[in-house]
Length: 207
Ligand SMILES: Cc1cc2nc3c(=O)[nH]c(=O)nc-3n(C[C@H](O)[C@H](O)[C@H](O)COP(=O)(O)O)c2cc1C
Image (cartoon, rainbow, N blue to C red; front, top):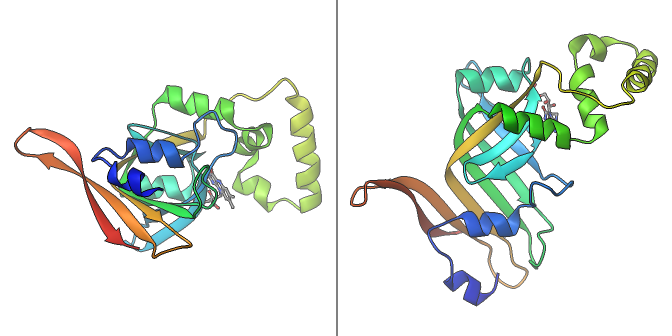
């Protein structure tokens, strides 16, 4: 980011999100770490794809029977860590860290995200079960090919397909630089008591 662009930063994080994250039509989806709390309050984490994002937040998709869904249903506070190592028109590495609250994604969004997944991932949503995982690998390969052949016209989403929206209340943009120290721009959502609205506050932090 140039000096002028730093000076132009506003209290709205959307321009930075738009500059850093690929559009939802881009087939290459960023990988992120989704951190949750388990039933004992211990941290848990795994990689998921960022399926979509918009002004409401960040969407990811999974199996409704998965551990992560049980965890966010019981304790919806989550964090996302998105390393962005090849941002277009940027000379440096970036990272976006999100703190927020997970909720079920709207059905229309879940349908759209399934339709946008490549065929391999659409099929995975059907065959990603404990029973299939327990089969010998040779059987798994055969059954996978048979399932693909039986659905050559395409897949519809299984009942277990689900998705979450993470509504952010903190966004931390980390800017790497080869020429000087890294630093962060952090946006925190809070109430503006004078205007009676919810807005973003921005501060600059050391890297
Ligand atoms: C590159 C990569 C991408 C992944 N994307 C997803 C994803 O989008 N959704 C998902 O449920 N699991 C995804 N996984 C698998 C998860 O990391 C995890 O192993 C699985 O979802 C089970 O997590 P849980 O037991 O915490 O629910 C991905 C794994 C890797 C390595």
